[in-house]
Image (cartoon, rainbow over all chains, first blue to last red; front, side):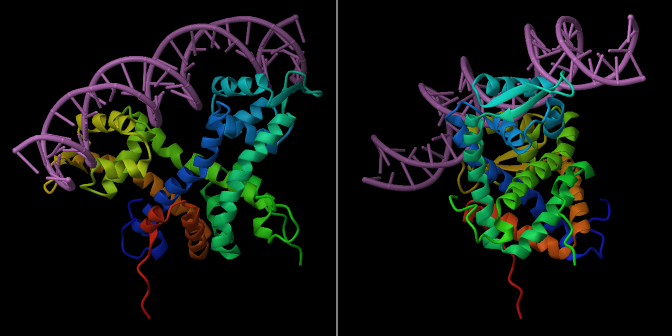
Length: 165
Length: 165
DNA sequence: CAGATAAGTCAACATGGCTGACTTAAAATC
DNA sequence: GATTTTAAGTCAGCCATGTTGACTTATCTG
């Protein structure tokens, strides 16, 4: 970091550019989450519930430990929202067949409906920006965002099947 | 949103791509904030303090109303953290000269030190990703991120002086 | 069988949002 | 000049969501 302002830094790595990067993340994330936050109020749910619904929807039969490692929160924090979602019929838990200690998680029909409602909002939000920016910009966006993810294990989610030929 | 899956959608607007967009924002933001969150513990501060320090650092002499409109939180929420920062000597308030009702905010020397410490962490985090992705990808990243910001007024922060010639 | 692991639970606490009601000082308007 | 509006702050209480620590239960593994 000490050489941030030392002379021969490429334009896109100057302090001003990097500060704009900080702010872009702040503003984009703020606006990206505003829609669902508002929709969830109707159910008495919050952003934490949303994250659980999203990732369970994306990975049916996921177990609790896996979910915890994605969310990076404690078991106790997760349990508060997860047990609400189960009690209110948005998520179903079934014992694992290979390992019966596990509770495999999946959305109920009601959960699927809510998941689509929420993710349609966010997909629409992103689609609008992608359309405005165009496919080449989206390619660059993807590249930078993946590089912003700290751990290779998390980056693996975004690998593309290699084009052949 | 209804036509998300209807046939002739360009590849970069397909549901899978958009869902990856959702996750990219989640993971990138999670990792982007982890560093400062950790550093702030030492001071007994949290993410809310960080945002105040950041934006006051960026816009010295900003008044409280302006800060509120950037942060999109209530006066009461802001006041909790702002008054801590003032009491502990990280931010100085001076009455506005044109309008003496206003309290203009600026970082103290101590505040400047903390601001740099925090933002160097985040600038380094972003610089690493920018370097890996390269200038063209960064251009695309900027474009998409700006388009992700909901309001034109907020987008204006990121306008570039037009290249002449 | 012993120990490790998956999941859940209880309790207490911190942070950072929120609403509502109210005060004070200064500016702006009629 | 009196009235209204605005900028800022304050008190009180609520809620969501994160934390630590201690502990239980069931099941799997060596």
